[in-house]
Length: 297
Length: 337
Image 1 (cartoon, each protein chain N blue to C red):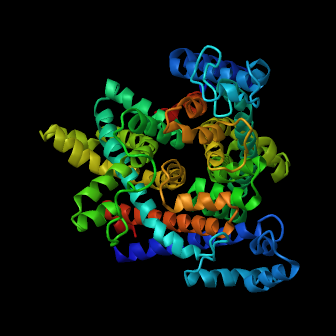
Image 2: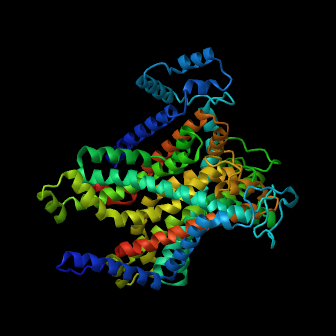
Image 3: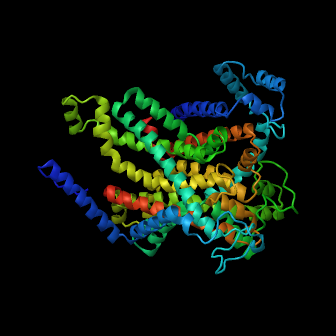
């Protein structure tokens, strides 16, 4: 960020925060795409929060008389084979998909972040063990490993969360390791050590807070992948079960109707999924520009 | 050169060991008693006990592991619970279908992405550059099963250009005599033009789906490394020496820019092999991906374990091939080793 050396430590951090905000506003103003992605993100959060209370139809209520109707004024996105309103189901599904993605990203943030920081800070055998685990996970095609994990642990939503977290582990561990490896020899770490802080305390109180910005960017960059991964798993019949409204499973249910012309059943949940992932990817790029302008491409 | 290859192969061994340990542990993580699981839901207590002894589940964990490794060494991946057939045989017979699809998908991605990346890098901030950027961001955002379904709707239902998404060949054709297992190559060898065309038609949409999904990282990396190469001193010297723009871009810049692109291929293969499962489901493709999905639905674990292992071994082998290719292209690496 804007590195203006100020003598007063407190003044510098206050200035840093202000500068970051100003930089963020500059990026949003300069980069219409990031501003657009941010607006889209707010819309998705809103749908996840209040979606179930505002949708026009019950997402699970079937109405066989109105089955397989194309989009109309009454049913904006048409109805599926059981007469359920596709629009309501797509909106209601936002919460579940969002929660799965957030839970798995939060989990891997904890696991990968802590393991990586410890590996970079302590080095030695901690580093070797974490590195070996990350390498072993990376030896698998990630989606295939996720399939295997969910199949072995049992077909449930929490296992989708766990599997998505595990396949993302190497990414987080490596970023955290690289960052903390640099900080290990920073002046303020030596100073903290000379003041008599224990190694664990230095790790948690000095090193960890300082790698947070990079880790937050990592979160937004992998959020899109987490949603795609979870939706892909439920598309092949893992985790979420019908009749629950979830984007991946809705696309799977509508797939058979695509070849007979009823495109709307699979199209709208698929489009919602695509927009959500697109939004997170754009936002991730934008956030990276704010946190680390050098990596801008 | 040979010593480099030997070194690379040796470096892949720990990955392989890790893969085998993980696939072994996955079975032990199965909820409940694995013996009861493999005996089936209707088994009596004695039957479960028999299965336990037969599978060696009454032995300590390390003995079980040695046994698993021994079975693997003989190419035995266990039997499917639902069909009773050996998993290894089924995977071997289905592998060519998946390999043909994946390789063609990669070919589509490379053929589109590399020229796009080069053109975008030679004309920064042009319309083409922005297109390249939009495509590479949109490409990674597309759920691969969704792309496949939309392509099917447009090209099969609306336009009628593509055959129904029901496997490798239309029912009116019989598969060509098996040589490689790749229908395109086998039908060409047999000189059967009709079957070749039919196989190609069935392949186009799934390969395009995989290609669209995986071209984004390749295009992005080609653009970035071409930009770096074009800004370097040797390109300026080549330009100053009066070489044609084509020679400068292709012979000088691209040859150097290729290295990071090849490194990216490792990641692309990870995506491709995973996406392959979803695409096979959408197009009812009779490959190992749909074999695994069928096993998943029937809660049949042995085929899934075999599938995960096969995929991981192939992925390690592909990464090894990329590593070696890297050494072939970049002489500096050969000298270092």
